[in-house]
Length: 209
Image (cartoon, rainbow, N blue to C red; front, side):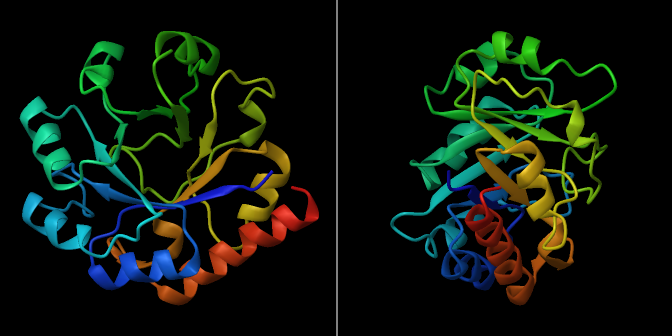
Protein backbone atom coordinates (compact mmCIF):
# COMPACT_ATOMS: atom_id res chain seq x y z
CA UNK A 1 0.00 0.00 0.00
CA UNK A 2 1.27 3.47 -0.82
CA UNK A 3 1.72 5.69 2.22
CA UNK A 4 0.18 9.10 1.67
CA UNK A 5 2.16 12.19 2.64
CA UNK A 6 0.94 15.40 4.28
CA UNK A 7 3.21 18.41 4.73
CA UNK A 8 1.70 20.60 7.44
CA UNK A 9 2.26 24.07 8.84
CA UNK A 10 2.86 25.81 5.54
CA UNK A 11 3.02 29.60 5.65
CA UNK A 12 4.78 30.59 2.40
CA UNK A 13 3.83 30.23 -1.25
CA UNK A 14 7.27 28.84 -2.10
CA UNK A 15 6.85 26.08 0.47
CA UNK A 16 3.44 25.10 -0.88
CA UNK A 17 4.96 24.86 -4.35
CA UNK A 18 7.91 22.82 -3.00
CA UNK A 19 5.63 20.36 -1.23
CA UNK A 20 3.54 19.83 -4.35
CA UNK A 21 6.61 19.49 -6.58
CA UNK A 22 8.05 16.86 -4.22
CA UNK A 23 4.88 14.79 -4.48
CA UNK A 24 2.94 15.55 -1.29
CA UNK A 25 -0.64 14.29 -1.35
CA UNK A 26 -1.89 16.93 1.07
CA UNK A 27 -0.75 20.28 2.44
CA UNK A 28 -1.82 21.62 5.81
CA UNK A 29 -2.53 25.16 6.97
CA UNK A 30 -2.77 26.05 10.66
CA UNK A 31 -5.77 28.27 11.42
CA UNK A 32 -4.93 28.53 15.13
CA UNK A 33 -3.83 32.05 16.13
CA UNK A 34 -1.57 30.90 18.99
CA UNK A 35 0.55 28.71 16.73
CA UNK A 36 3.86 29.98 15.30
CA UNK A 37 2.63 28.53 11.99
CA UNK A 38 -0.67 30.40 12.02
CA UNK A 39 -1.88 31.80 8.71
CA UNK A 40 -4.42 34.60 8.66
CA UNK A 41 -7.46 34.40 6.36
CA UNK A 42 -5.74 36.89 4.06
CA UNK A 43 -2.56 34.76 3.88
CA UNK A 44 -4.69 31.69 3.37
CA UNK A 45 -6.17 33.25 0.25
CA UNK A 46 -2.71 33.89 -1.18
CA UNK A 47 -1.49 30.39 -0.36
CA UNK A 48 -4.57 28.85 -1.97
CA UNK A 49 -3.41 30.13 -5.36
CA UNK A 50 -0.44 27.74 -5.22
CA UNK A 51 -2.52 24.61 -4.77
CA UNK A 52 -2.26 21.93 -7.41
CA UNK A 53 -5.36 20.46 -9.01
CA UNK A 54 -4.82 17.08 -7.33
CA UNK A 55 -3.37 18.27 -4.01
CA UNK A 56 -5.67 18.13 -0.98
CA UNK A 57 -5.62 21.20 1.31
CA UNK A 58 -6.20 20.58 5.01
CA UNK A 59 -7.29 23.31 7.43
CA UNK A 60 -6.27 22.79 11.06
CA UNK A 61 -8.36 24.27 13.90
CA UNK A 62 -8.22 24.27 17.70
CA UNK A 63 -11.51 25.04 19.48
CA UNK A 64 -12.31 27.54 16.74
CA UNK A 65 -15.48 29.59 16.51
CA UNK A 66 -17.75 28.45 13.69
CA UNK A 67 -17.35 31.71 11.76
CA UNK A 68 -13.56 31.16 11.58
CA UNK A 69 -14.05 27.67 10.15
CA UNK A 70 -16.69 28.83 7.70
CA UNK A 71 -14.55 31.78 6.61
CA UNK A 72 -11.60 29.52 5.90
CA UNK A 73 -13.83 27.17 3.92
CA UNK A 74 -14.94 30.08 1.77
CA UNK A 75 -11.29 30.52 0.78
CA UNK A 76 -10.63 26.79 0.35
CA UNK A 77 -14.02 25.16 -0.25
CA UNK A 78 -12.54 21.78 -1.14
CA UNK A 79 -10.42 21.49 2.00
CA UNK A 80 -10.48 18.72 4.56
CA UNK A 81 -10.89 19.91 8.14
CA UNK A 82 -8.62 18.83 10.98
CA UNK A 83 -9.57 19.34 14.62
CA UNK A 84 -6.96 19.36 17.41
CA UNK A 85 -8.81 20.82 20.38
CA UNK A 86 -11.56 19.70 22.73
CA UNK A 87 -14.20 19.60 20.01
CA UNK A 88 -16.88 16.95 20.41
CA UNK A 89 -18.21 15.01 17.44
CA UNK A 90 -21.14 17.37 16.69
CA UNK A 91 -18.76 20.35 16.52
CA UNK A 92 -16.56 18.50 14.01
CA UNK A 93 -19.32 17.15 11.80
CA UNK A 94 -21.54 20.27 11.72
CA UNK A 95 -19.82 21.65 8.60
CA UNK A 96 -20.75 18.58 6.56
CA UNK A 97 -17.19 18.33 5.34
CA UNK A 98 -14.78 15.38 5.59
CA UNK A 99 -12.67 15.86 8.69
CA UNK A 100 -9.69 14.38 10.51
CA UNK A 101 -9.80 14.07 14.29
CA UNK A 102 -6.44 14.54 16.01
CA UNK A 103 -5.68 12.36 19.03
CA UNK A 104 -2.86 13.39 21.39
CA UNK A 105 -1.26 10.18 22.62
CA UNK A 106 -1.34 10.97 26.32
CA UNK A 107 -0.93 8.19 28.88
CA UNK A 108 -4.68 7.66 29.01
CA UNK A 109 -5.37 7.95 25.27
CA UNK A 110 -7.80 5.28 24.05
CA UNK A 111 -7.82 5.09 20.27
CA UNK A 112 -10.55 2.46 20.21
CA UNK A 113 -12.86 4.74 22.19
CA UNK A 114 -12.08 7.72 19.94
CA UNK A 115 -12.88 5.68 16.83
CA UNK A 116 -16.33 5.01 18.26
CA UNK A 117 -16.90 8.53 19.57
CA UNK A 118 -15.89 10.11 16.25
CA UNK A 119 -17.54 7.63 13.93
CA UNK A 120 -18.15 10.40 11.40
CA UNK A 121 -14.43 11.20 11.08
CA UNK A 122 -12.73 10.41 7.78
CA UNK A 123 -9.50 9.51 9.58
CA UNK A 124 -7.73 9.80 12.92
CA UNK A 125 -4.40 11.58 13.33
CA UNK A 126 -2.20 10.47 16.22
CA UNK A 127 0.40 12.89 17.56
CA UNK A 128 2.56 13.50 20.60
CA UNK A 129 0.91 15.65 23.28
CA UNK A 130 1.83 19.31 22.91
CA UNK A 131 0.77 22.62 24.43
CA UNK A 132 0.82 24.01 20.88
CA UNK A 133 -1.48 21.22 19.61
CA UNK A 134 1.06 19.73 17.21
CA UNK A 135 4.32 20.71 15.55
CA UNK A 136 6.35 19.99 18.70
CA UNK A 137 8.91 17.80 16.95
CA UNK A 138 8.42 15.12 19.62
CA UNK A 139 7.60 11.49 18.93
CA UNK A 140 5.68 8.98 21.05
CA UNK A 141 5.93 5.21 21.37
CA UNK A 142 4.47 3.75 18.19
CA UNK A 143 3.99 0.41 19.96
CA UNK A 144 0.96 1.94 21.71
CA UNK A 145 -1.02 1.97 18.47
CA UNK A 146 -3.40 -0.96 17.93
CA UNK A 147 -2.80 -3.14 14.88
CA UNK A 148 -6.52 -3.36 14.16
CA UNK A 149 -8.09 -0.04 13.22
CA UNK A 150 -11.57 0.91 12.13
CA UNK A 151 -10.41 4.11 10.41
CA UNK A 152 -7.43 5.25 8.32
CA UNK A 153 -4.59 6.31 10.60
CA UNK A 154 -2.43 9.38 9.99
CA UNK A 155 0.85 9.20 11.92
CA UNK A 156 2.41 12.45 13.16
CA UNK A 157 4.80 13.46 15.90
CA UNK A 158 8.53 13.96 15.50
CA UNK A 159 8.78 12.44 12.04
CA UNK A 160 11.70 13.30 9.76
CA UNK A 161 13.69 11.82 6.90
CA UNK A 162 15.70 9.62 9.28
CA UNK A 163 12.89 7.90 11.17
CA UNK A 164 9.89 7.89 8.85
CA UNK A 165 10.95 4.62 7.22
CA UNK A 166 11.03 2.85 10.60
CA UNK A 167 7.69 4.44 11.48
CA UNK A 168 6.07 3.09 8.33
CA UNK A 169 7.56 -0.36 8.89
CA UNK A 170 6.21 -0.55 12.44
CA UNK A 171 2.88 1.27 12.21
CA UNK A 172 1.78 0.79 8.57
CA UNK A 173 -0.19 4.04 8.64
CA UNK A 174 -2.46 5.24 5.87
CA UNK A 175 -0.53 8.51 5.84
CA UNK A 176 2.33 10.31 7.54
CA UNK A 177 2.21 13.97 8.58
CA UNK A 178 5.31 16.11 8.97
CA UNK A 179 5.80 19.73 10.00
CA UNK A 180 8.86 20.58 12.11
CA UNK A 181 10.82 17.70 10.57
CA UNK A 182 11.08 19.57 7.27
CA UNK A 183 11.69 23.08 8.64
CA UNK A 184 14.52 25.57 9.04
CA UNK A 185 12.42 27.21 11.77
CA UNK A 186 8.72 27.14 12.71
CA UNK A 187 6.69 27.94 9.60
CA UNK A 188 9.72 28.13 7.29
CA UNK A 189 10.14 24.90 5.33
CA UNK A 190 13.26 23.51 3.71
CA UNK A 191 12.83 22.43 0.09
CA UNK A 192 15.65 19.89 0.43
CA UNK A 193 14.22 18.41 3.65
CA UNK A 194 10.77 18.09 2.07
CA UNK A 195 12.24 16.18 -0.86
CA UNK A 196 14.35 13.95 1.39
CA UNK A 197 11.31 13.16 3.52
CA UNK A 198 9.15 12.28 0.53
CA UNK A 199 11.95 10.12 -0.92
CA UNK A 200 12.30 8.29 2.41
CA UNK A 201 8.58 7.48 2.41
CA UNK A 202 8.80 6.15 -1.13
CA UNK A 203 11.78 3.95 -0.24
CA UNK A 204 9.90 2.52 2.74
CA UNK A 205 6.94 1.69 0.51
CA UNK A 206 9.22 0.00 -2.01
CA UNK A 207 10.64 -2.18 0.77
CA UNK A 208 7.12 -3.14 1.72
CA UNK A 209 6.94 -1.02 4.89
